[in-house]
Amino acid sequence: MYGSGLWLSEVLALRGHDVDGKAGTVRVRHGKCDKSRVVGIDPHGMALLDAWLERRRTLGLNGRHLIFATYTEHNLGTALDPRYVRAALAKLGVKAGIEKRVHPHGLRHSLAFDMAMTGVPTHQIQAALGHSSLAITDRYVRHIAPADVVATMRSREW
Image 1 (cartoon, rainbow, N blue to C red):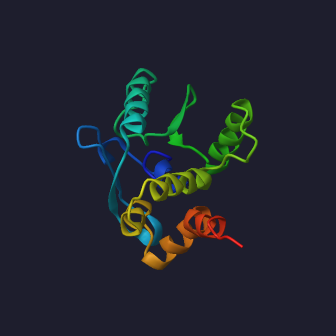
Image 2 (cartoon, rainbow, N blue to C red; image 1 turned 30 degrees about the vertical axis):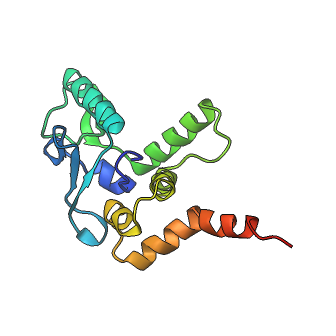
């Protein structure tokens, strides 16, 4: 989710043919408001996804199954419950010693913050996150990354 900026629902709907490892892209077929889009995925995220795709083959999952699906003996290939993913992320955050709450949407916030801090133009962040308008993305980025406001206030002298 962090490597591509997808919403949890988009991640849980991915199928093998939606990922192009060579191009480093992920196709979202039914995003928010049922819009489709293609997003990039960073090389580290793609490497992790490739490792999972290889591992899931050994578990008996194939292209007919969702990428992120159950793989127990009596429950092979059914969709993961979003509540399960949220709970798992929260537990992993605690295990990693992260004091803040770790949740799927927070990964989108972190990606947007990192992109803004490295100078990515807001319209590119908008496209990556699938926002319908630039105003939404601008508000989103200003909320999580008010660095320019902080820098302006810190540079003031009396």
